[in-house]
Length: 366
Image 1 (cartoon, one colour):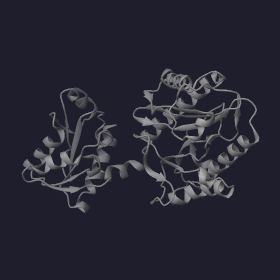
Image 2: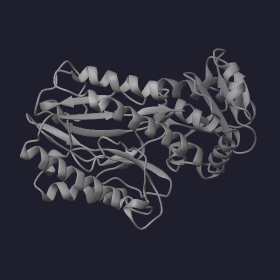
Image 3: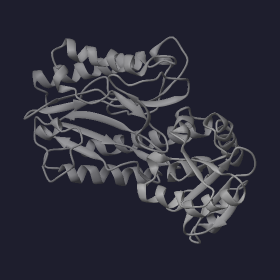
Image 4: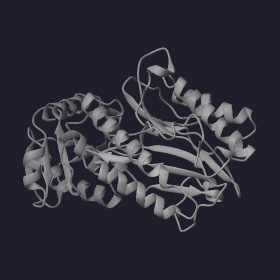
């Protein structure tokens, strides 16, 4: 995708004048990958307002950089940030915008000692560019979500009394890899019985038992792009309160999906789902935001939550994941990854995480 990455660098360069900067020094590994194509544990890129970007990495990644980052000038050095800052100064690019949120105080102080460099914050300029996805990104995200659903459908019939949380998490992650994922997008969450009241419970040795609600939060990664999906199932006939809570969360999720249109304020999308839960008297048991953006990171902008700024745009992938968590009893969360699209009906949204065995609309009884 060399042309796409050049276009991304051009967009970043075009905004440097407004920041009174001659060049941007990008040190976030994710942002370096977004702008150049190189995935590396030690890389940085210098994007000048005019001219060719300079990519720095060490000898371990030099050959890979030549293959994956055409259109950039390559510098091989271990001290990637300092090396690029010194190069910028030599070339008269003295006003250097840097990613303050990605750099330690020690690293910033090191750059400040380089003669001729005038540092100024770049802000989250690259993260803002990453919010709206191009077709190639959406294709990779769609593949990741499809593999996630396939893995869940393959493993769901194995959920039974006596299986432990950790065993199920392992089965799902293995199924994603076998289906073609590069790796899991994150550590799979499996929370059963009372553990379901912990939104980010770490799977342990608890064995499933009849009557358990079981929440499964998983995702595959393909080409660097992350899927995110949560399903809650029940072992055996559900109790009345379990069905009530599940149906309430499902209704809240659908309300959030329906509200997720281009131009919608992210706080209003959150409120659309949250009000459903609050009006039913469960508001205190839904403590997290409704969702978040996904892409090269599992959690990225925009954040959907009370008081969050900003509005949705076309081609923005987000999660919608309301939940109710009842201490000592269990919990329900339903989550899908979707792409915000123009259209007048919820059906116009691109729902990427689809499963045959558990659609999210109805409680799956195993």
